[in-house]
Image (spheres, rainbow, N blue to C red):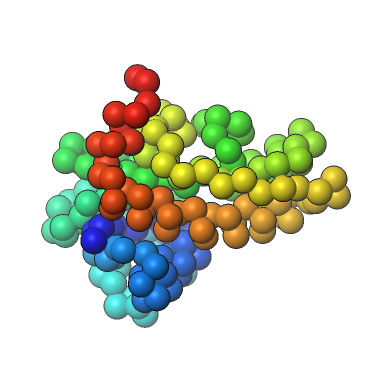
Length: 193
């Protein structure tokens, strides 16, 4: 079973998804702690309701000491909107989800609705999401899972966001199950440095 920490900045929709799938037995993980860089984030209230230890911590220097108090295999960035630098022990164990098919529409400045607007403006007919290990460079760590969604000519950025989020709800748990099965090292070894 994979022991995870969840870092979030907002509503906690991904936390809801994790909690539901853990409860159903389709995600072989255990949430150890939830941390938000936003003090009044709805995700923190949800974490408390679910019974997870929940903390408000603004930067790496306050987040990482909290993580040291828990047994954590991986840190999941679940709508965490700051660049996170983990402690050395977790340097290759941070997992992020990005709302596009990396390498398209990724990198510094591409997040959330900005991605979906860019996809719409480019006239793409597919989009999707990528679950990947985070590195010191935005969206360049090893890919774990990608899911593709078809788009229609008339799709607005909001419709694209809805379609991509539905794919994210499948992709992130699938990725965590794969990491649990294969180990973190497998994914770093399969890519060229």
